[in-house]
Amino acid sequence: MSFSQGLSGLNAASKALDVVGNNIANSQTSGFKAGSIAFADVFAGTTGLGVQVAGINQNFNDGGLATTGRNLDIGISGKGFFRMVNEGGNVFYGRNGQFNLDENGSIYNGTNGLFLSGYQATGNPPKIEPGAPIGPIRIPTGDMQPAASTAGSLAGNLKADESKVISPTVPFNPSDPNSYNFPSQIEATDSLGSKHSIKIYFVQTAPGDWKAYARDETAPDMSGAGGTEKYAELDLKFDASGNIDLAAMGGNTKMNIVGDSLNGSTPLALALDLAELTKNASDSQVKLGEIDGQAPGKYQNFVIGDSGEVVATYSNGKRQTVAQIVLADFPNTSGLTAEGNNVWSESPTSGQPFYGASGSGSFGSVNGGMLEQSNVDMGQEMVNMIVYQRNYQSNSQTIKTQSELLQTLVNLR
Image (tube, rainbow, N blue to C red; front, side, top):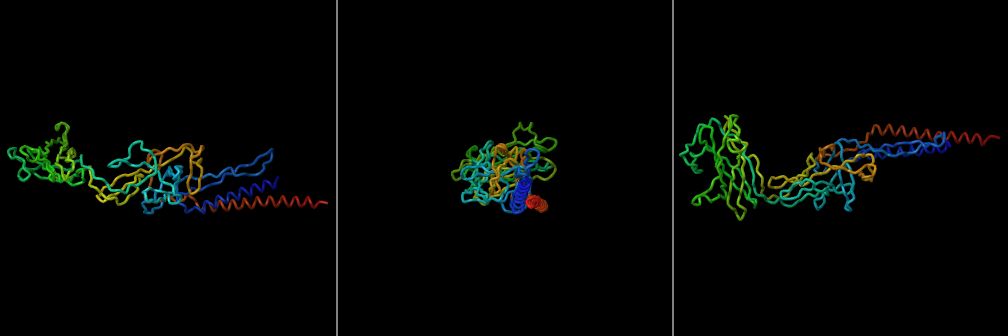
């Protein structure tokens, strides 16, 4: 019996050394999770029959993050796995964030050829719809299509102690600087992507009371009386704190600026919100807050942000979110089935995966331009190697001792 006990100890110690060797060999493998061996006794009657390997457990704690500066390197800090699929649709999960881009714009793991999954943005402009299906991420490299400006806002201040007051008897005339206090200018885009210059004029009609006029100077609306230019107008009322008084303005803070068709475009129709304007003692200065729409642009590059969003950049200076990387987690990560190539698959023990975006719920964060390192502790592995080596030697000594006892019995006369 002692022979079988010792032999089982030798086998167990040998497998333990295999685990240590595998950990050490993968100490530089990105996203690798160290393994540890679990032993169990073999029992029969009143005497044990030795030891057996109960299983190999993996340590899913984080590895350190290393900066690479490469836009296709992605590291996860905290809980979660990348969801990846092969060409056959089989799903795998991993933490190795070394990705590449194929000729179709799909992001794939360079070590095993699996495609990274996430939510794909659709529409023009692209956006991620709630409940969007999860699938392989593809970065569109086509041109950004033009979109007309329909909404915008102004921000800034109108001088509270402005001394120049325009008499009601002086009609507003953009050609007459004496008919307004100061102008401001913004740009809008039509349906073909052409730029339209929008001029806004501010007139102080009485101390502290202002009025705004606006027109599309590039393609003015000529539907005014007698075929003259038509202006958008808005009376501005402020409260004692210098903010727009919504009640006094009847809740309307928008100027509806209409232009004419330019080169066959749809006539410009821009709702410009002035609700962010203030009136205080500093100088008058008004600038564009936000505006939608864009000119056409050529695809240039993409970046993966810390939120897991894949953002494409274009020659027109615009950025668009084209996809969102999805993270997966499991009720029991220890139950995942190792598939080699540093990936795992779902099993009945792991439970079904649940998905989410970076930083949501219990999920960790996605870090662009970084890679998660192996979580192998080399110092601990060296200690384990010494312990298992001593274990192996001790088990071999029990076999040697049993052999000597048998030899003594054989030599009895």
